[in-house]
Amino acid sequence: MWNRSGHVANRARSAAGTGVIHLPSSVRVYVCLSACDMRKSFDGLSALVRDALELDALAGHLYVFANRRRDRVKILYWDRDGFAVWSKRLEEGTYAIPFDEDGATNREITAHELAALLSGIDLSQAKRRKRYERKAA
Image 1: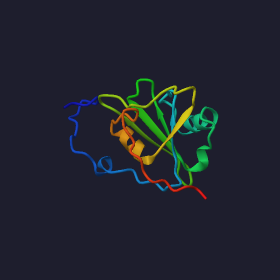
Image 2: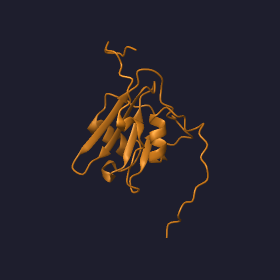
Image 3: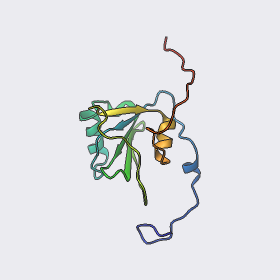
Image 4: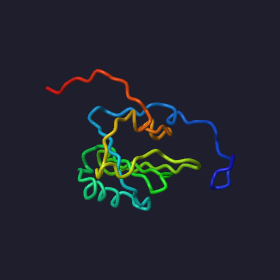
């Protein structure tokens, strides 16, 4: 299979692509519910977090953005001493990222849901089974 750059696509999955995303329980994942300009990088995405999502970009959480076609995604996070951006462009298909949900600007998801979303699973179709959740004291 050929990819956009004209090279044969590697069908072998990387070790990182097959596992679960492990994040400390203190890290939250927020998905932006409006389409974003994927030309934005560190400063532009952190401004979106501050102005559009009304959250603190320096809090150490993950902020997920997608373009209008939903074939590109960027994740912004603060990594101890500076911003880091992870990005991915799909060769085929789209991400099932919801847009404009009830006028909300963002939606919080779990690290497991982020991994599922990046793997191509539509979270609106997935059924979440009941699990024990410890009450905050």
